[in-house]
Image (tube, rainbow, N blue to C red; front, side):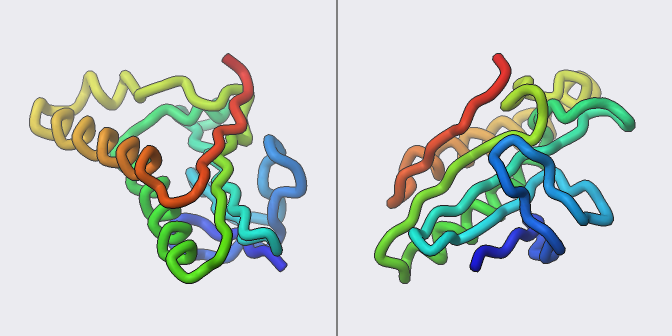
Length: 142
């Protein structure tokens, strides 16, 4: 039986049933929901970051969004260390997989915050590329 949770570990009452469908039964809208593992060891990380209040899910990257994704990724990596099989699917609940970096945030941040963000983003990419299990992106949109 799989469990869905936010990156901070709050368990969702009902997990998404299909990739690309938004999680149901939640009180708040977390930026990332982690579902899994299935009986085959597959986890799904649903990105659902809304950039502007009332706007669509765009999954633009900010420091908080990167931190949430990395937290979920570490949870899967830790689980994989003691499991015979593991895989991670990255998916979006929005119209697009991701619209890149949040340029509004980048333009408003100071140089030091920008550099720290880029370093953390590259660390996330390195974690994905060096994962000891398959990581697949279910990319939608363009």
